[in-house]
Length: 505
Image (cartoon, rainbow, N blue to C red):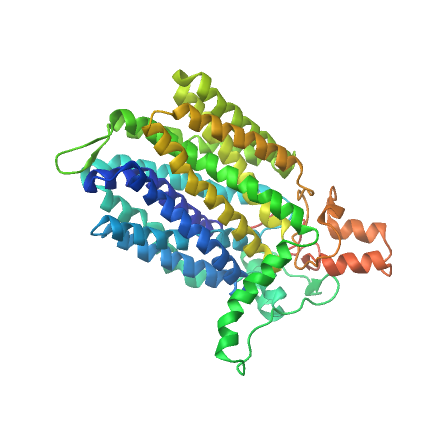
């Protein structure tokens, strides 16, 4: 499961890193202006913003597997077509659809998370993020090897290989038990758990699948007798219902705070990536007589080395996320990124070192945010909630080329760096205001809009603490169990038990 979903993150990172090379290469071939060059990057993020809502809703309504496959197929198809684009206009069109497909990649994160035990979940999710770093380094290395010799079209085509592998291996991918239980298919959930138990060499307990409180209601589906108008409106109604769910009750404050935090993380991450490539290309990149981009090999190597900064950043997050908790790790990472980026303003001679430190810090922040966000939302809106936050982050990513590429080319790199630093500090302050820490908390199956999520602040295990603190017959016990229902498989030896540390599938 880690390898399969990790392949999706690797492919996503390669497509994102590709943008750093595609814009300058297309500029040479078609004589583009700086604004036209920036549009090649921004149109991808417009697509991801659009796709995040649709794919998240599809993943919650039709299953994680289907949403995962659909995004991979769309991204792969239009990625290959991008390599064949005959003109700038066609390239913009194809890259928008690539972005639309990339908007659904977080569905893979939700899928992977729902197979993880509570114990050590943060570290296992960070291992998934390691594939993002791997993809960034692979793309930088691939550009180093083929950009000068074969050109940008070959670079795009070779970058689509991981997505092709995803589709080939798709029949091996199971649906998550959380989603199956939420939709009332307990038999299928039991079958998946039996498969997990068989592979892990752990027997399932005889008690079978056990749910806290009452059985979750299946998600409503349109009947065969409904009119075509009702069927046409049903997806939009589903999105509206999910938006209402994450923007009401205890989830409202968390969702609103997360929007700016995600926005800032994307702005800082892609801003630093583009600052790295812009700084190198502004001094060494040239267009030859055939309209091909020429970058010095030493500068491509420098970009590759800077990309490896994400590895220590991810290690930093993995050491702290289950020790200090999600919130404190996120605050520390954002402040470190802000400090490194602001130092660029005053010490430009240390450009490479500070960019390395900034990339490491923002990767730690992004990694922790991807762990925290889906833990906050219940299963019925988990994929959608993560998708909404991801869509907001893409708005930050959309602005990043105009903040970095345009300003650098117009001679204002210090203004770009100061803006990124200020946003990081503000995001760190807002992170501290998040109402709940999800460390060691079981994943939620369902939630109502009553009460506040902050009621659960500081608990190590929601269900166990409620059982100790309140009699089973008390109104408070019944209300909390109707509102937050983790999924368990009875027995201490269960491969899906919260205390199990074995997560292989």
